[in-house]
Length: 191
Image 1: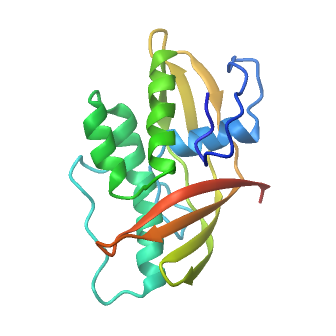
Image 2 (image 1 turned 180 degrees about the vertical axis):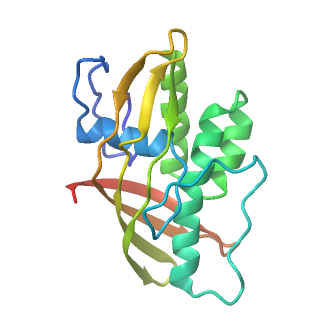
């Protein structure tokens, strides 16, 4: 499967097998494809309805807006992965992801589905730090993906599971519409 965190990371991973202990790469793939989460705390969140999430309140800080967009990405991601229509996936993810991440994630979803894999479960987003410089922002996150799994959509068999402490750094850019979108997610190891 192609890594989703950026165009420079194009290495292929081995096929996932039930006996295989998940690597950081596979766990990050979970984080990209399976998940509903809420930023800033340790409580998982149920998947929301398919309508678009609301924008942050007008009185929030720039850092709050960045956190909101980052967190909402993880909320709409499982909805996009479960959608049967590629255009609907793009519309959902395009609210919170921009190039190159957007096409990378959409490609990963197609690859998962071609291998009869689908995501179940959730992760917990734990934002550690946000740094904003103009129209660019960086978020550091220590995600818990122990409840995130990939399963074979034909057999229902779980093929891989997440881990409790994946350290990620996400880069966001503010678009001309003033919406913050993730452009890259990079693994940092364990946190």
